[in-house]
Length: 269
Picture (cartoon, rainbow, N blue to C red):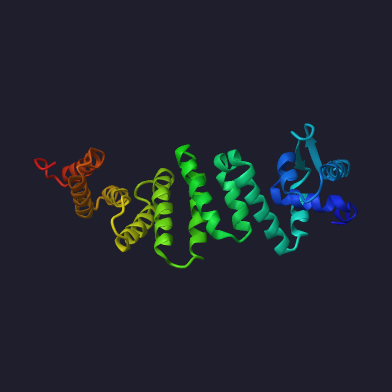
């Protein structure tokens, strides 16, 4: 801490860098720092000379890495909570507006800064995007982490139709990730889809009802609770027949056929 206190102008830069993360880019720090370019470069040179950070490359393409995680933690904790939140908010807004490629490819980064800023509503959309992107890459553990963060934030919001829809979006993305990591018959899978089903019942027609019932159906099928699985698969078939959508009819017939097979009803299967 004493080393930071002796840095004068560079102290604010190292604190801002600590909010950005263990490693940060010159361009991003320049976009959020309230100093001119000369002051910025002089301050960063002080940090490098003091061996608090390592530098790779030359401005404006340079990157900086804290020499040790404890240095970053000390700089971060030296900030007042209100100041930290202001920095996080500024960084999130700059990422979203000035660095759209980062916001698109690393939405969890924007979500993190909005969350730490105490701005839960804008954070939610980015946690949802992060979870969906991770799921599409089969990074299921990451997807679970991102989506769980979003679901925790939702608890702080008032119950509205929009909040219910947002929770349903999170849950229907979380379900497949849980299945991939924990297995189709895991209790967490049942809890996720049961909550999603309860939300569907509170809402008017929602296209997500089919995927929710499908997830529940296979949970009960894998636990050999075939009566419940059959009831759910019959609901799936009813939705497919009502919509005349082959993309729904195919999995509905499959679910019902498999359930009937394991119940010994071979002709119907």
